[in-house]
Image (cartoon, rainbow, N blue to C red; front, side):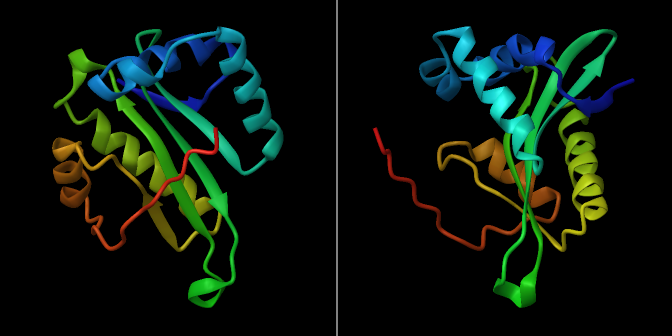
Length: 148
């Protein structure tokens, strides 16, 4: 049985390990644990930015970040932005991802959101199929610019 809950500071190392547990994350996630803890504290202080973990038998096996965004477009639609979706490699394909996205949707609805959106790397073909199976549509093209 998996339980989804807000992450605590003690969960941060396990979350970082999940983020690093794929080909893209292995290249980007490393370094000072203090930087991750500081980022977690900033997220907590923002109020509408939440790190959620999935826990099973005392182990963190899944994670996602959800941010609630108020805006004027789409008739002042409040939206939920979902990022950093991960399931432990040894547990993929067992329905945890779908359960996690149901949890995200419930949190989004409870926060008054009418739209849930996410981005995913172009190379993640399996993730694209997964999100489309849940009813997400690839409706936009996203751009990023590194500010370093």
